[in-house]
Length: 177
Image 1: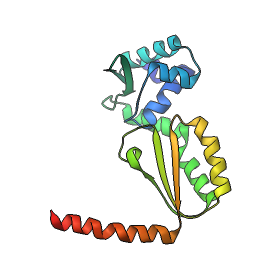
Image 2: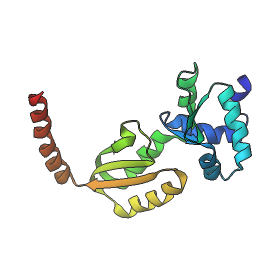
Image 3: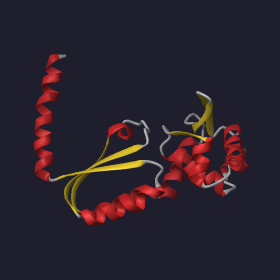
């Protein structure tokens, strides 16, 4: 079991990155093999090793077997921290936001924000955004992420107008309960 923990191959790392980065996500053999540009046999061997060691859970979905991170494994939190550190999400996001311009706030919205991985990451940016740089970042990110990225940019005024329209609805909804 300790050999698996030490990430003894590139394939272990390739599998752990998407499944442990967002533990609610799952994938299947052919999709992973296609994303990694590897044979299904080599991916299958590693998926089986990681599943036997308890780091992944396998479950049937129709005629395929899906895999996801085993959140109940005793070292799951540490593995997830290692994967996130390796991936460097926080630093990448900070650098991109800094270079985008005067971004007041950024939100991940939609299904991904609710912990459901439907294959699309929706982002809302509020402020004055350098559209040329945003386009360049998205072009670079799309091949690296196995998900669609949808970005909506609102000016401060548009966001505050939208926000003020949402608040009364929320208050009315709460009052009706």
